[in-house]
Image (cartoon, rainbow, N blue to C red; front, side, top):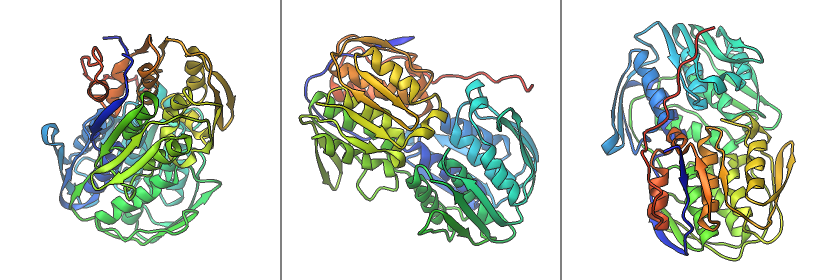
Length: 442
């Protein structure tokens, strides 16, 4: 189907366990690939972003076995060495894949080229390449503005000090961090400016520790990683995706009733569990139990909130804001303009279709609720646009989501699970993931 119509719902009474975290799965795949010996990833996500990572590792000669039925991935690591010394790797539009792989490849030996779809060639990566080059790598971009394709002439990392901008993506820092233990000498990383999405860096350090690396930081503005160190194969359990969980917590806020997301607690490695605190500020009830976190809908009020640390959930909150009393202002998300689409300007455009007034700022937006109406929503091939804006249809008849298949990037069964939680009919559709085409190498 090219579009899906959302069915309004009454108050909810549901529990759901979302699939495994994309962020954790792709970080664990990199650590397992660098490890000495086999690793088993439990609860791993099967989606477009993780498939392109798996396929890239296979092209590099590593043995990666995926069992989607049991959500398990087995990786036989190369101990910091790769069997294939030259490869042309396709990363689709997966930011984690190109950024993490570039760091990993720079720490090995060989010649590699990474490319993706047209949008990937518009997503800056120059700051990551500059940091790796400062540590002894030879990486370059082939598109204007420091964008992919990326060529890595890998001869290992010597170590030393590198500066890295923090205001575009924390994934740049994470990519260098995971490569750092493979350097010949200690690595010092200095973050220039404000670091966005800081919880994701703590997540990276946590995954590295699980694979045997001594890695910690109390001040993310300056991180020192002792090197050389060896990743060790292990069995690693991946949490349900907290960004995906935000849609179901938000569903309770919008439709009323209560929804429990199982498998996540306040001590989760993923910072996006803090999204429930935004809902609490807006008037929802939030409770914890040994099985998960429950959100209960309530009378919603607008808030002002800095979502820099949990920017992947900003679109979700913006849709909740449609149903609040008074305006909601979201700040600190200027880096969202460099994601799968411009997640400020394009989000504002679609919210206006639904009847809201939206004031766009450089670093965020203000949503002023209005008389809501159904609309056909453009998703810009962005999974988070599709998943978040679909929630408006739980209260507003006539909300149509175009290109629902784009959710295959991180959550192929999203509309099926949303139908199960809300009791809606007509939502499930052919859930084959999108198949982006390779671009010519020019």
